[in-house]
Length: 132
Image 1: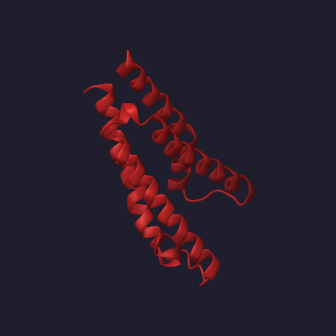
Image 2: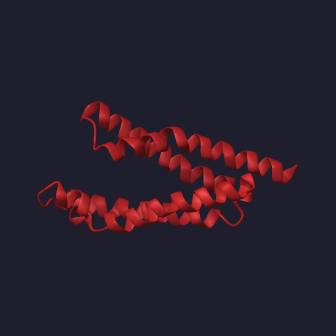
C-alpha cells in the first residue's frame, strides 16, 4: 500500500468520527453522552452543542472531500486538521481549568494535539512527492 493510499484510508476512517458524532451532537443535551451525565435542560448549552455538532459534521464532510485528490488538497486538509488541533488545545485548557474528562476524551486530545500536525506533515510530504 502506498503512503498516499494509507493517508487516504486513514483520513476516511478518521473523517467518520466527526461525521457520526456531529450528527449525534446535533441532539444537543439529549445526545447520549450528555443525557447520561444528567445535565439539566439549558437552552444555551443545548443551542451551542447543536451548533458545534453541525460544524463538526461539516468538518468531517470536508475531510472526505479531500480524499480523492489528497495530494492537491493541502490548504483544506491543513485547515481541517488545524481546527482539530485548536479544538485539542481547548480540551487541554479544560483539563487544566476544570479537570480531566473520561478516558476516551483524553485519547481524543492526544490525537488532536499530536496527531493533527503529523497528518498535515504527511499530506505535505505526499504533495511534495507528487510534484517531484
